[in-house]
Image (cartoon, rainbow, N blue to C red):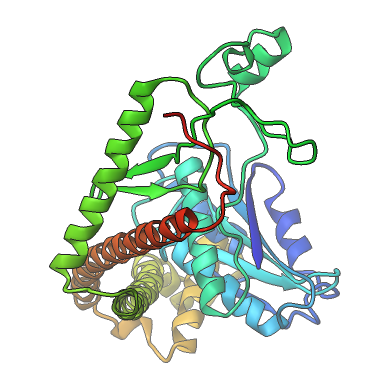
Length: 403
């Protein structure tokens, strides 16, 4: 199980990088990796990318922390998971540095990525949608590595409006006599019950197939005949929609439904892997493109520096450009490439082809995910109907419905 959180860095980028790369915390710097930058020139590369942004922002970088459960994972595996999370969350568009800390009771990753991406030079926007995406990617990666995942955590908070109304004693849900806010409870210890309560299941409408999904077999005690009739119609819609789906797929038993679900899940897993591999290739090309373009941009300055005898005065006047050029050249050499021999037009064409492939793979993944969710909903509906029938045949433990 891994928990993530993220916050902005506005002033202390250098301090934050020094903290996460501390030798004592990373087992002698064994678990430190970079993407799109090097440790030596990270601040300069981040600043260079930010300077190209159309919209200026006081935010320098984003700090993402990924914490694992105690004694659940090895440092090397945690580092690999952190890299996958960073690659997928930033889509290979932001420079980042990742460090895995092992000095605490639990292993955790620190990921610092540039606030501005080096492809389109757009700022990162942290909102509720991005946080949901972060959690979804984190859970998917952890599940692939066999780690535990928190399913549908229940929120313990409330909206500011409801909190304020509660403080003033004016909350609508707490008013006596309201139809929606005053469910009648049954005290099992004393055996106190409500005279002729209405026992009604609450179903959730699923827009994909018009299915009505049981959200937990909740009880709602109402006196309205209209409400009972409306919910009975919804139950009938659930049965009809589930029957139509199973008939279209040629499913005639719960065993065959489980088999189709297993096949659908396997196809979904394969599609996810295809998307992941394509995204990794795109990120790698983005990285190479960045360094190749940097070498092309600063090659004239470096050539003058070499022809002039590498004087100290010229180096001091063009320190940043020369450092970025040498860093880019060194990085490409580590990949087995020479910056002068890379053809940018070929790389950009390959990048475009991969982007098209990613879009097709993502569309296929969305379709398979929707199909799997529909089958899973149908299975829950079938099981709810079966269990309901068994419940009716059991002893008289169910509350009596209003006639």
